[in-house]
Amino acid sequence: MELFPDLPFASWVDTRATLHRFAQIVGKVRLAASPRRNHWWSVPFHVTGRGITTRPMTDGSTIFTIDFDFLDHRLDITALSGRRY
Image 1 (cartoon, one colour):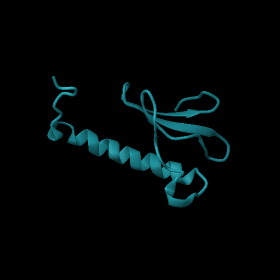
Image 2 (tube, one colour):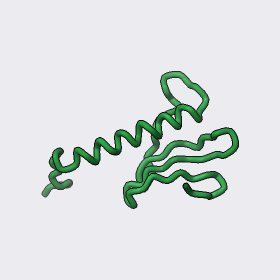
Image 3 (cartoon, helix red, strand yellow):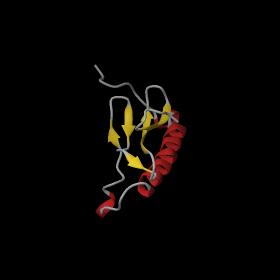
Image 4 (cartoon, rainbow, N blue to C red):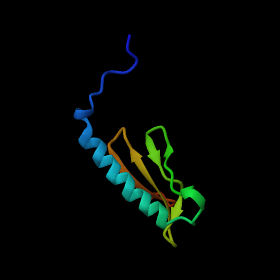
């Protein structure tokens, strides 16, 4: 009995490239909106039940997070007020 099905690399290489590019963009936003810390500690993604997320950050006036929702195939930006972009 196999725990996970076979996942040939060729069948999802485009998805990997797209996710990598999106993660780089979100990482740059995170880097710009966070205080500087040693060794890039302020930039990692954190695992959630639906995908990965940033910790809360601010653009100076709004506190927000960016979430990769792998179940609904969405990238959500959510402000502390509850507004979603």
